[in-house]
Image (cartoon, rainbow, N blue to C red):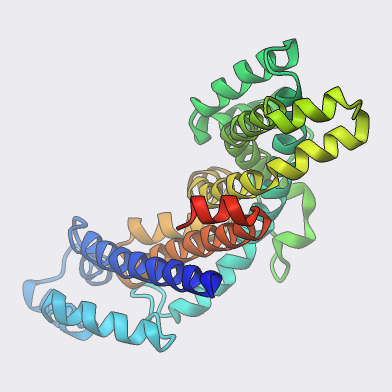
Amino acid sequence: MRTARWLTVRVAAHAATLTVLSAVIFWATEVLPGDAVGVLSGQDATEAERASVREALGLDRPPLQRYGAWVVDALHGDLGTSLISGRDVGEIVGDRLGTSLAVLVPAALLALLLAGALGTAAGLRPGGWLDRVLSGVTLGLVGTPDFLVATALLAAFTVGWPVLPAVALVPAGQTLWQHPDLVVLPALALALGAFGATMRLLRAEVGQVVASPYAELARLNGVRGAAYLRLVVTNAAAPAVHAFALMTAGLLGGAIVVETLFNVPGLGQELTTAVAYRDVPLVQALGLTLGAATLAVLLVGDLVTRALTPPSRSTREHP
């Protein structure tokens, strides 16, 4: 019963957050300089022609009325029509989502592998040489913007050692999933960007477990090797899952920069293009999709974390 109430509260909180986010996204697009009318009508259009285009697009209606209609349509699965291409926005988002996942999934798995292995190794011997080296490296990664990490990888593997393609040029009729070589650089750039903070979180949690009384008692009782490692990892599993959820959510934001730099035709690049052309329905749908995906990842992370947390800790941490 307590779990059901907790889940209801969490879902309601995420729904409220998404509602507020939808309002923020809508009003943010309202203050963008210019609009699609200028793009569609051209620079030489008269005011009458611009007014006609604005009326045809429905942009002459009051903003509050347009927001209400947008929310109602979105609840029915209708995200609108692109003002520039005329395509259904839902179809565009669906197409681009598959491409983004081809980069995000390998990036998340790679970051999880690196952060999990190195964070555990550093946390088992806090203050050791490996801990100090990794702390310095991860601190540098945390302070380095994603575009600088991606640029350094481009210089290293396309100029200095040209073994990988610089941009993701997918042949017509094929998907990015069919070309792993095109995924390596953008996925690595995203993974390195997320790895630093995640590893530091895992290292701190493992170090806390190692310093706990029950871990000390296990060492005094002669628990060593795989058994001791299993003890530490088991007790650090719940915070590790939470850290992984935060990392995955962060990858969605980093994908905007990385996809644009590597010319990956995913959600991030589509959002950049839509903003440039003032394609308001597409900007709104992409922003709402990224926000909803982030909240969904965090909710799943909360669920798994609660399932792995002992009842006494679960009650204390999640009242």
